[in-house]
Amino acid sequence: MYKNPDRDERLISSLEIYFRNGDSDLFLKEASGLAWTLSQKKYHLDDDSCAEIVLKLVHDVEHIMKVYQEGKYCNFPAFLTAYIKHLILNQRKKNVIRARMEIVTDEFYTDRFPRASDYDFTTDILNESDEISSMVRDALNRLDPLSSLIIKMKHRIPPNLREFRILSQRLKPLELNIKQYFRLDQEEETINRIKKRKAEDQLKKLFQSLHTSQPKDRSRWQGARQNWFHRHSTVPEEKSFRKIAYYLGMSQHKVRSSYYSTIANLKKNRWEKVGWKEAA
Image (cartoon, rainbow, N blue to C red; front, side):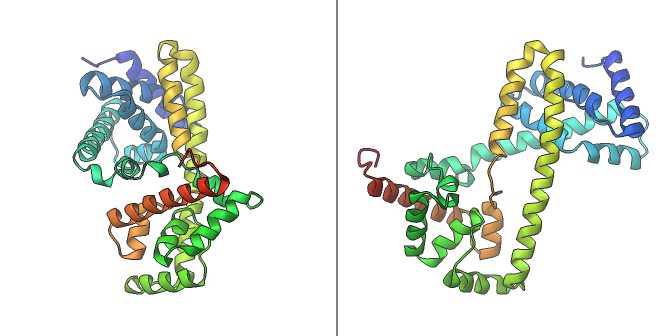
């Protein structure tokens, strides 16, 4: 049903171009079309899931080529189709998990704490010249140390002395000290930024190509591109709840609940102090 000799030839040509000069543009153009077709027409995934699979392809292009080369496969179109199907099955599993385990999604917590859902905490806390930033920092200092530590770990804000002590105690079961933690944190942030920048460059090339070659899908791809950039544009890079839970020896549920309830209270205090009582 999905055999396409012309596309297969273009995929093989894109493979040769990649191994000759490292240019992945043609591969991404052809592979993204194949991924979207399989995801939507055969497996009936929605546009968001299709976009996630394509973006995963963009991110994994070097890995895909390496696996194909080292595995000594002889049919690149068949290999790529199998790889894409693997991504699709993983995406379907993720969708099922999200549907069944609402408690581990941010939407669950922002529904419980609606004041937190549209609070631009990062902008407030990082703007040193803004009066609001001072209010937020003062509010953080009045929190219990563990709650404020979770906030600061999430947004990579330097902790104070009392929070250092708590973090130090929590790291002991992992046989880590404060210095080692911050070294790992810095390495994680650097790696994330490099990956993000590389993916952004690849996405720009991909969408630029698709903009002219697939006009009927232009709005769909533009939306996928904007959604991806929106999700990956936070500065500084936020630490995941999973990592915070790991370092603090807590469940993700407790970490998320603490974070969102604290953010909701900070937002309420901010509104009250600036006189926006109707917003509170």
